[in-house]
Length: 55
Image 1 (tube, rainbow, N blue to C red):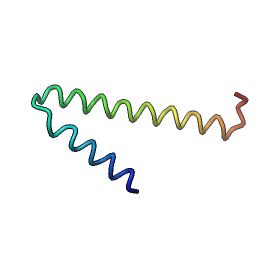
Image 2 (tube, rainbow, N blue to C red):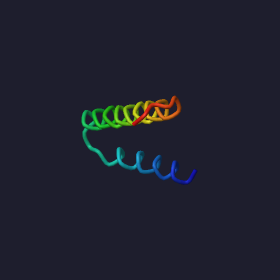
Image 3 (cartoon, helix red, strand yellow):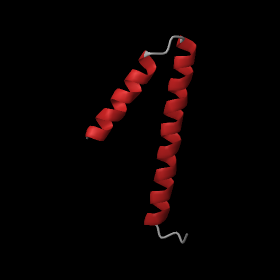
Image 4 (cartoon, rainbow, N blue to C red):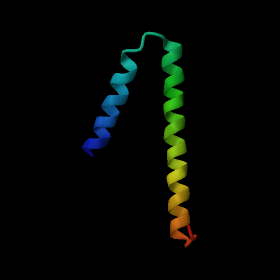
């Protein structure tokens, strides 16, 4: 739980110090895109491991 709180705090403080709104918006979109792609990869790996796919 503390790891999630630390990641949340890092996320919030990272975007507070940006001066340009366009750069901040772009980085937020890029950050969420990366989170989603990592989630898809983890889901695909767990699904393949659970269904008995030989690696």
